[in-house]
Length: 182
Image 1 (spheres, helix red, strand yellow):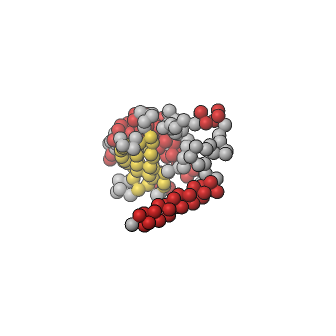
Image 2 (cartoon, rainbow, N blue to C red):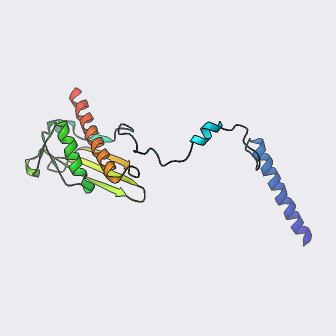
Image 3 (cartoon, rainbow, N blue to C red):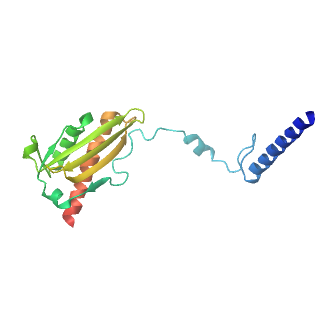
């Protein structure tokens, strides 16, 4: 019985030795040793983990996330009704679109050429805002849509929603400008 345990112990020690030799052969540091290619001291002290930039990602970062379904209908829109969207995104979108001046914003859905609808959901666990915005005609046919994800801790939720509204307005403006050029 003792021989059996000694045989198992010898095999285990052999596996450990072979594993250590493999780490050394592949260039991995072994316990108590430093890596042969260490970072300069000044760079190592500056690389502290962070949660990202204090003000969040820049507004011009990332791919264009909007899609056009009917370019002719988009170019024919003169009046736009903005439905109520969570987290006051509708108010912020109305302000951003009002600054642009391309659409006349109306207060009644029946007076509009198209309707801007959407959602702005916050995920407290993930610390981000997920917004989806659609422009559709009165029959519900999609004309344009955009999806934006923004972190909000930091910045705060209100700032993330403001950034989202600015991004959506910028994406819509860019889409219309490119459509007019073609």
